[in-house]
Length: 412
Image 1 (cartoon, one colour):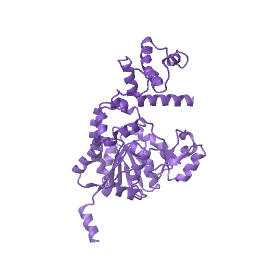
Image 2 (cartoon, helix red, strand yellow):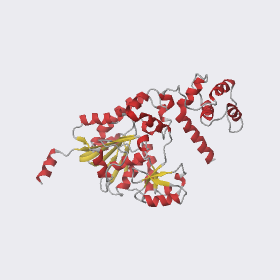
Image 3 (cartoon, rainbow, N blue to C red):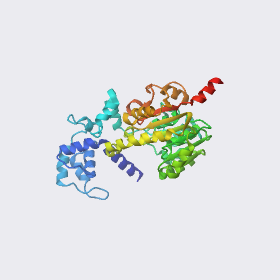
Image 4 (cartoon, rainbow, N blue to C red):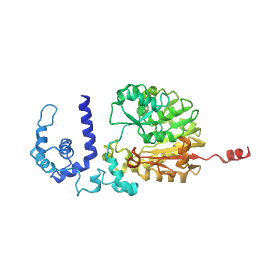
């Protein structure tokens, strides 16, 4: 049964990655209306797996656990489709790379001259990345524990806590995961948490904590010393983090739902925090390898509304940062309007904040110079093709010391 579920899941995710090409071929074969699921599966068997139309028809026989027989129209369409490959010289760019036509020009501008490599990377499945829980293990210990489960891993190239699994092993059912030695977390997401620079004894806010992936990573870096407040507008999302927090052996996290009482808490707590992380709600364009369905549900109105929400969150969360503290803004978006443009507008409106250059933020948080593949500049930008991670943007901003505090420091 587990094998069947895995096969079904792989088929569904594969069709979502190839949906534009499959639809293009079906329309070319005479299917004008949007294809339903059964026809998309049939087309995928023909174009991706190389099945003949006869073999597909024999499979669609109405038997137990099998689809109903193909109609005459469906068979005619598949007769035109079968024998071809997914790619065709007449396919436009958006179809060839399975990107919604309305957003393709925006993404191409954002990706610059490397757009083709990035488009190709977005079509592929994401690797399985693992974060070692520094409260319980180091990479060597975790690697040995996973090897005992027949799970082969290698150190990831960018995160000092990262491991990358070979294939798609059943990680969550094994003792290493269940005992809290490791967590599943994309390497890019690990770097977001590390760049916060949370240290033992600090007061930290994870403003859009969700299910707590970055909260867990920061808490481990703080060695359970200090305080992390995990905030979110959704109580169910925060509740999902409770099991993970216990499993990881974390004791310095409290949770706040940003409802009416939570908003009052925000006002009372400003500005008292050393670090505030905003893992902002965004279009998720950087996660399309991992969530291929997201590309087909996103619309322009979503982005327009998210930009307003991101600006509001930035302004609200910034008030929590104490002088000399840092505000870290991150998205898993590839679009400048959610990233660089959002930060530029914030800095114009908040002249008490300044960007910390990426090389400095990296050196202070992770140690050493920027690794190969990380472009220097003010902000961190990760992409699937350049870094083999989800697409991420990270800006580290520091609140300036008050003038009085600066003068006192100079006098001392």
